[in-house]
Length: 326
Image (cartoon, helix red, strand yellow):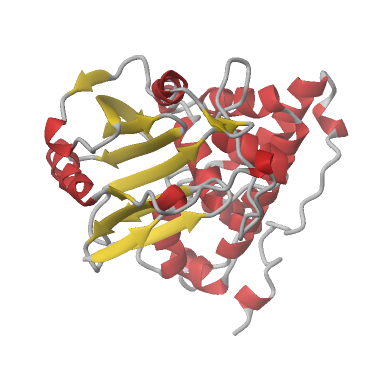
């Protein structure tokens, strides 16, 4: 087992072969085994104002706001943690046309919240994954920086709080930093694409466009920038040849095929990059390219042709010169 230390002094252990990804800006920690679609997302939060920790009711509400209305409460008494209240829910969701089981666990106290989401196509495997919560620890000796009192953090970090009319906390971080991590990008595409409307790509994207349009340019442009960089990284000779073999590469088609990797989870994307999976000819999702443009037009009430933003990375086929070198 490997021990992992997260923000706010939280610790947890997972098997040595498990893969770990983290995003220091949003605070998300992602763990998953290499031979399964099981994924565990853990996000610690700390909230205080002028040195006073947020009431436990506020932290509880912050967790409950993240729980879908369709979720059912569940009991996990064997995974309770000293000095923390805990609530758990189960839900069945549809992602990318697949049935996904989700377990949500929230540990909360005054000023503290640990939000845990377990996803997988096997309900049994999701329930079995709960055993890792027995390794959870909260190291109270680790000081949480209080910027209101003038404490200087070792690494610069801004604190965000949930509240009525405020964006979700991870979106607050994106708006402040004016950039989006790959983890946040895939969290958004996982959560805000309506695959029940599969067959009508624009209808599938409606929740995504609405989310981007709701919070304005900083979120829209950050999404666009990260999308372009992710597509650029897929623009390689090796990935193209895995699709076309010795046939001619269609520039437009290869771009639209690469878009599929953006709407099928971060693990799917990583598997394509690492060669564990292959993209397939005939499977495309061109519409994702226009999500930032449509969101911007909706937010400003202007024609989409007036969209002003240009990304650092060009995602057109063969723009990644290094990736196409022999």
